[in-house]
Image 1 (cartoon, rainbow, N blue to C red):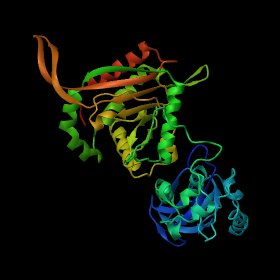
Image 2: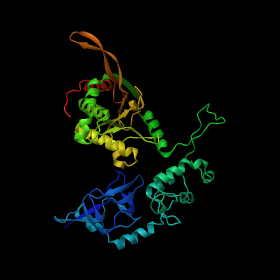
Image 3: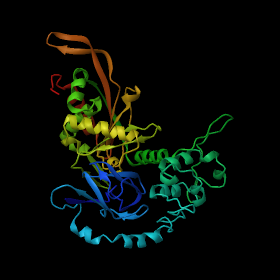
Length: 436
């Protein structure tokens, strides 16, 4: 029987610890591979930890509400057959304290204030635990301990989860408690109204939610950082359209994933980046950082109306079926709010599909610290002039606009325009007889 150690996963570059919210399995329970063993929380996200193997949960080393460093062994799973195996180096095993010691160390933390200032406690007066993510949001929104404890929680044992606190904040302006709790701290006064803005009877005032404010700040910062230039090309994507129509059923039967236009656009972009690597860069002062990895972000609209950009890592190493699988998976989990922190980080280039909303073109804002972003417009049928060996003819073709916004500090018109044209070339030269 092999003993596999389950370790606290790394949930992001700056995350060094996580809090255990609940155990989905108990000692002696059978576990399937990829089945959830426990739920954890950081100051950025709540997440489930799946089992890397099938077996039986033999040992739980930490309890609910314990704060555990990344890389620490949190449980042991026994599997049938094989030599004893560990999921972390042996050094980590010797550093793991006994459960009794863990409880003794964790107990004082229950009444400790949130690190970094503020008076939000991990454990409320009613005994409910508040996760790092919830406490972080409460601190940023200037919620008092009493106001936080007044929120009805829908989580385990009545805990307040991310959805609960965001729903409360959305309606906070009309609540009684909001009248006694300032929404904006004194250290950061509310932005002045634009000149000429007046409120009339019947006008509705809607407070931006936390994500919308972050997006707004990111967009303003990008425009202040990079001098934006946008170039446009029109591409004849008839071959791409016809190939997809002819092969979408067989593609899904063979690979188990739908083939949309997005992975086809990704494929053309990674080929063009290989031809023009100076598009895949970032700026650090007077230095240009040329990125070795090609990590493509795809802007996705959430049901709330906000925007998130999951990233396909090393997209240049993936086949078309691999790109399709990643695109579908990230898009689905983005809509369900199940993305991990590392899945929205590390992008080196971004694609946004404005054609989804019926728009023919757009002027996207660069996703810092990248230097370029591509917008793909709607594909429309219309008459176009074709050159043939018998002369020019007019034919019905599937046409679309591509627009590229780029940072004019390091990307000149020649580079930006050539790169954009190369993407269009790859789409126009798509082989309609390509096998699935």
